[in-house]
Length: 449
Image (cartoon, rainbow, N blue to C red; front, top):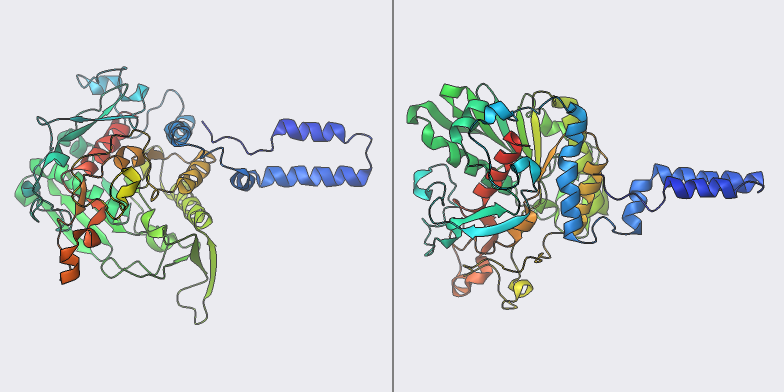
């Protein structure tokens, strides 16, 4: 399903032409020109005229649920399966409960259910690849309830994550996560879900600048993470030193990073958080090497649209839809204002151990205008890409952030220690935890699209 059409439509255009009969040729030309411009720039007009597209989350949700697979279906045809998708015969006994399987339901619409039998999927202490920023138990978190919630779609059940199937499917192949630290968290979660069935001497992890590579030697497979918080070239591209307040992104520069992505078989993109510096964003026209830099400021939504279009062009040029799969993960919500869920006006995720039970909750840090841009760009594209719509289901999980239970890279002041809210991390997520669910959703879309 495509996003709702712009306000101007072919039917209204036909009316203009019919009414123009008998008018002066000059007026006819003017009306025809207006019609032409409306059609040519319809996408932009739809932004200006309103937000049919982003009037509420559920409309967005339905749009993404359809558009995430519609272009792929058109591309492949009814009798051809997507790369990595299991056929009925290959599924064997892996039949899914409720609604006939994942393919017949929206896996992103559901509820969290308590599961103290099958959750967590691994223990924090058993996965040495988790960065100290995400090891909440090691850093003193007293509760473990956040580890025991399982996502249950309304109309089906997610397939159990099968590490052997995943690794066999990756044999001789590359899987890569590209984006920011939240995508890196999902990357590490994936490794934690897989590494326990790989012998100790048959796996390794190495970092080369922006690229981190986990190798499963017996499978000749790699799972990789590439740091590119904007996907395009920026002044925040150093994988270690990148905390720059005055962020600048270079227009049309995706190949700066994209040259390192070629040859990947499964690609998982994300980009959002680093764009959220205000209502406008600085875009470099030219090169970072230029002595006099040509920098313009665009509305953040338009700057983000530029990045989305660049990403899709790169995918179209470099990813073979017959052999590869591409995913895009939606924005990861933060929980920096507890007043938004009925809490203290000065609070945040610190000391939160229960999830939000309001099914309509949507935090102000998750901009619907950005979701609208994604929907418009993806909906108008025939590039096969699967949208992982994790925003709403993650919005309920104010309990799952690292908060104060993480490695602090600089000593805390007495003032901070006296007020834990001041240094609580309400952006990143403890592992094991929420991001394992993101990978279960990715797994279901990879094998059961």
